[in-house]
Length: 260
Ligand SMILES: [Fe+2]
Image (cartoon, protein in one colour):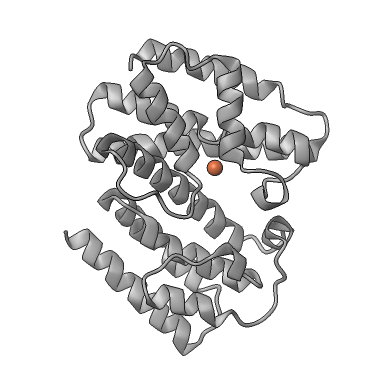
């Protein structure tokens, strides 16, 4: 990919998003939230890609995937006033339909287009399909890590802002005591937690911890450590033996990943 193509796609993105700007401050805040998320995911994917010494063309492609990975969020919010895919529709597929309708990907080669579309389609799956071709696997993992790092960052920031309606309203989960045992079991077995198992906000925090098991690159693990995401989440969970065990387990996992 060439830098001119990336610039043209950035221009298209800016124009496209502006169509969703709104006088209603709540709607506008939702649009801005995803615009800012996109900007940060672009920065993060470049840092991860850089740590892998990817070539310039691949850096542009990675940045393009980050730029467009959540393009469906804008129409999703306009149509349904929610970012919850379960209460609306899959935002990745909605985004791909918008991209195909616009014709904005026409300047890319077929290989680049396929990589971009598939990486977007896979970015919000619980797990990646097995046996992906090498380059598709690489770009899919890049966007998944960059996206997760930013969401972990937003989530841990929201935990420290108690005055905001924030999490309870966003997730629709009650802020009740305790947590569900099944999520603790998942975490101790090194598995991702399931959205369907979440019953309260503590479960949501446990699910976010389990994302560590779905990170792929040493850079991502070092970012989790550097920013103290695990510690920030654990400090907002009940002080029980279970949680301490989960914390130790996650720390050991990250240490092993970083030692490789
Ligand atoms: Fe997304």
